Length: 408
Length: 114
Image 1 (cartoon, helix red, strand yellow):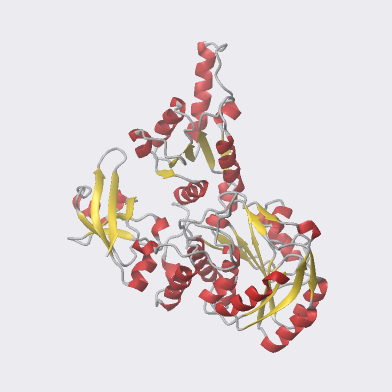
Image 2 (image 1 turned 120 degrees about the horizontal axis):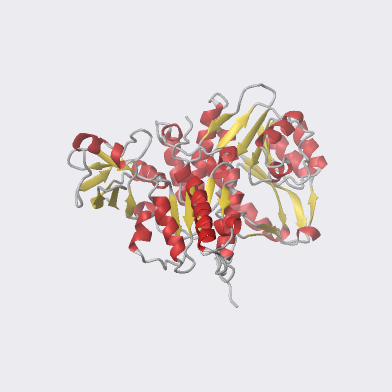
């Protein structure tokens, strides 16, 4: 969050919690990230406050593991929070929810500032009673999961909670915003494709841009601006590059976000996108890579199709006629799918045959070759994309399937 | 045994500037390009090309250098090049490296930062 606000040249103050061993680092770091003022409002005890991240690019589930969370406690200081609010007098307050205490909640509400809540890490639904101005959720977060991963259910939940605005971030597929109290349909905006280097804090970055863009801008423009800067954030680990690129966006006269083509592939639409897995998905093969990619594809709400799992495997006891029937069922499945991912874990001729057959239909195909072992010229040239990582496969899926799905 | 990473609180160590990386990529929508509309064919291998500094139909496009006609769209994952051109005054020039007019036509370019 601080990185994003720094790059946006925002006037902000930071209230944070941390363990004591990080006091000095936070005190020196926040001013270097442009914080006008700051206050430690909670001391983390019993845990290092370190989160292990299994998948930082969010190709699939990020696998956040909050170390020693069960033995952690936070001693909040409402005095420090009150002092900060009194001295800084914010017009807007963004809370990155998670284990916030009722006293702190009350202090924030009494400040009179407009309240924004990023509820993604809110395991207790603590904010429902506060009627925040804006609630940010993502398709990766707890509120969305609690609502059965149903956007309409999420909208209804926060409508009942009295939120004025609800923003749903849909990862690489774009975003939408509702005014729950009105009958208007959602305002939508695309995501802007990039080579995803990481996703840690990208949602916070989105929130920061939304809050700093003027209220007078139409919601769709605010969403586009937020998505555009968030894509810049996700495309680089280097903070200096991020700051430089955002400065360029801020300085340019034309509105970069409004001009660029984006990808809008909503959560609901993805559920209808069938992804064929061409792979040696056999009992004697180590299929963990297929399993991992299947999980990643499902995470983003696409529908993976594994023909061996669904249709079965030909075996020596089958008659010619039975084998042929199995072939036609596999072919029917292949031809019904919207995209194909080829995973040649071995030199399986079936994988390459399926890739070739599918590619001739001009639908998008991806060759997933993490080890770079595929040297066959046909295989490397018929696929629309050759990907070396799961993140690249997911980026390619959104880009290839979202080509006709731009909004605005 | 052994540890990796910076070992201290702070930023990632900066890598090389991506704006300085050359680009090798297939182009998109080549049969709907200005060049194809004008000539009814794809540019030949070796044709000098450059990245247009402005957008065309909301996409970054590659032009034939001689005529300024767009030969195809740059894949959207290269959108960051817009910022590289805007702020640092960089431009990108190169040539067509693959040109195939077949059932699945292909146009690949190589671009170097200038």
